[in-house]
Image (cartoon, rainbow, N blue to C red; front, side, top):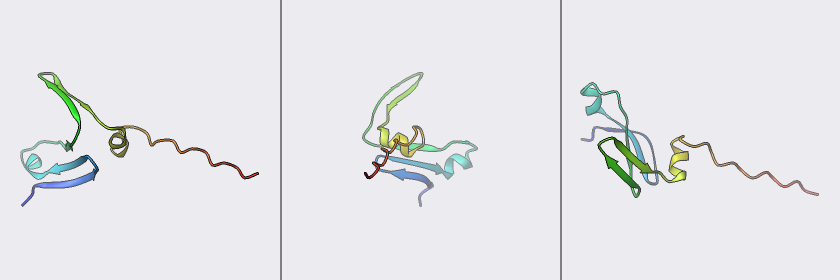
Length: 72
């Protein structure tokens, strides 16, 4: 039985709650990224998030849509 409850997912990412975290008293969500580069050290983690994934997670504004051409 999985302890994960998906919040949002897509190509290359999965944002979820893990009930074991809640049971342990942690107030966190988990973000799993696949196919990304990262650098980890004692101070933290730096992750190169693809722009489409960042937009899907709400970390970047939506890509602007080009204006419609007016018919002449």
